[in-house]
Image 1 (cartoon, rainbow, N blue to C red):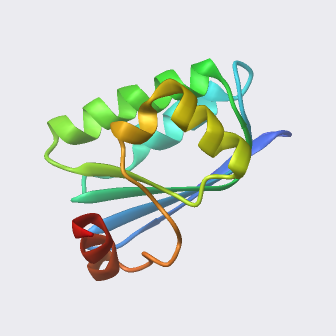
Image 2 (cartoon, rainbow, N blue to C red):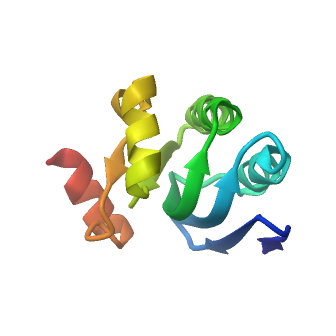
Length: 121
């Protein structure tokens, strides 16, 4: 599934245990509705993995969407995992303390099995 816009889009792939979302562009007040819609449309799986390597900007609206998605996924018994945040986005995650709430991994934790191993490390 693709949600398209001029400044932002999300691609989704679904497997038995993991939903992979790859966000590209800027997540701000103008695009957060598309971002939130993509997060909400993800089917329930044990892991929702969000690749942030293509995100150049994460505003406060985007941070709020991540927190809401985290609470929603956790309520369904799953885990939201952030992967490869751009350095600017990683700085926002640290400044807001979100890196303490959500696991943040590098892409070396690719498969579901590797993700479990990285989370244990």
